[in-house]
Length: 291
Length: 153
Image (cartoon, rainbow over all chains, first blue to last red; front, side, top):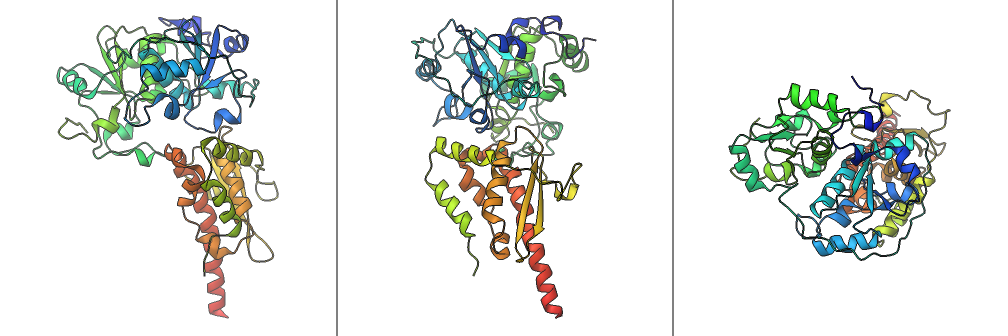
């Protein structure tokens, strides 16, 4: 079995180039072709200290539509890219708190607009801090760019409830990445997140339960090797990497972490994230629920 | 008459009129003033009775009796990313230590949301209100002990 500390290129990933190490980021801090982006759940973390040169993209203020439950529009994405000084050629490297939940979520939203020149820093903010690397409170400013995005593509990486209903009825593959208690319906919210409760507990019938954290090494939050990931998703859970897979959680952030692992690290050709997730499904009338 | 402790009222007034960026700045300034519980009060491993449940920042709270009958509060935050917990520890120490116990015991959990704002909805609320509960509980215990003692005398 591969060591958890093995270099990214030695972990057998299908697309090792989308994951970069803290060393790689340290070596590219002043690379004009690279923009480092911190995305956190905790709004206090970035201003309290971040990787030198990193900008912040906040999931609530920047990525969410401020009225509807949806993501920013093409115009909003273009304005965001301009503000953080990113062109279509810029390599955007995401990192953040909570084992990169929000970093992979931001990465996923960027893919809706086709910004494929994107990477995630393995281990996230905690690993950078644990290694005693430089942090700063200086908020950088970059010249505004002119960025032209395509219309948001909601069909390739994203799936909506009605399609999930048909998808589920067809017996296709779903991965529920929430905690075992949320999956079983024992609890109707994640521990510590009581405001995001739902009316019904349980899971989408047929979904496999693989909590997101199983894809990560517990000591430093890095992703497990391809062999270890296959042992969990394929050998243990019987997921077939050739066919479609849909991941979901509570609002779509933890499932972005697993979506990233299945799509890029294992190279599954068709993985979509159901961002409506359990806060939509568990509050919906007349949808099938299994406990 | 029970009112909000005067220092807390001042802080709440400050936070009632800030925008998001100013709120973050105030909270980070507070976190920068954080001082961990001194060894004379507690040393690791900290006792489970001082541990705040459901707080992902791994916060601990202690209360020490002041000569004037009020309490001085001390905190530890074990998660290095627990900036919110550190800022809240500082605000509670600066606004509730040394204040009348009746007022401390009556501080409402909504105080947390007035200070941290609506963006707190994600996860932090439970941990921060848990820290407050330890503080108000300590004040209530002293008040109950006093009432028991005065009933006996």
